[in-house]
Image 1: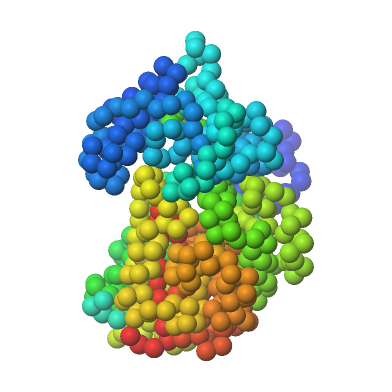
Image 2: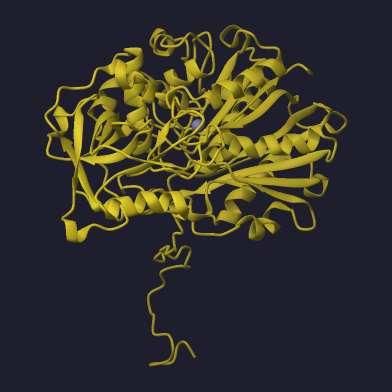
Length: 175
Length: 384
Ligand SMILES: [Zn+2]
């Protein structure tokens, strides 16, 4: 059959056996944040950082996962954090990858918000990549009011706020 | 441990960027068949199989152990899958060793693998989540800031990372199974390579590899094989949360606790002088000095000085990563097991060109995730 003109196969050139097949891959999922992370995400929709304080060790987590990882107790006290913080450490990303939405090179930093006891990863802009420093003071730049949503996408990026750098001694235990 | 346990067979694939000649099943079978043959056994002699790999999302195969059972001679036998991110190769060997030490099985085959060419690990590690900004750009983006913190804390000079990158690639030239064979590797070549995650350059990062590793572990009364057994003197796993206030990401407590446990089991009080060789998970060059400190080979802040002085070089007093390490071959799921396997080869005296003369006691270490999973073992030529 395969040799009949116009039959199911008209391939004349032998390209050898098929050994691999590349197929697109995607992952869609519903995210159920729970009570504590809902507070954090709704805070973002409101243009502010909401964290929680542990009643045992008094550490403030942002975002809070609803319990203190050290003490194992539920965190119930809500705390609103400042819009400013300190870069504890950072790297300059110069790697292209699938799904990347930011132009490289960009600065990816650990930002410790004032009043928080755990840093989180943030994008730093409005500063050349060779002028970034550990200890640099930064502020969050939010999207326009009408674009705020319950996601970190509400924070466009952080940028230097002009304050003097924080002393290494003040943040070294957060590294 | 209740029963003594030993490595009696080892096997690994030739690690490459793309092993297009084999499927995943073919890849794991290649390593496993070599391990079974090295133990001078046949498939029916194996009582159980313990397998590990990195998260299923990497290759997009959910619970791949189910379809790999026939390729590993595991049909009708107990088979266990282990999950601990990048440390999984080590944890998988430890679970297998527990099955022997507890007296449940006599001979256990343990296998770990990754086929990165069938996968997009960078994508799998960068899935968007509403509570985190999509900034990571792979594992390097996660670890580079912690490396910068180490450099700041220890005052280590910039060239230390390059030294490790060169040393491990030179060791790989001795290992025919290693993925990267770069005969011209030099400090200049590393320095001229592209900056990927400043301060990390391309040649200071691990490659992306296809590969598998396998070992046969046996109880004392089931020892066989072409080479003497590598006796397990101590083994442990530890983990810690990825995020807690006061977490030391440069020198994680889980790593310190894990090594303290293993050393205590193996009677080690001074790892640098008592151990003859160590294979440690160093996917980015700077993790050598960081883990030198975490594993107690020196005082805090001094790790880079050992590297700089050549202590960890092949001819040094405590060679690290004689196989070429993760910097030369990185089939992620197998990478931890390759560390455990290399030290077994060293104390069995079967490491060929990368054999350290007189190696009798050696440490294998693996870590994974955001430095929150650790697994380690100490193996020796002498029966414990
Ligand atoms: Zn607490």
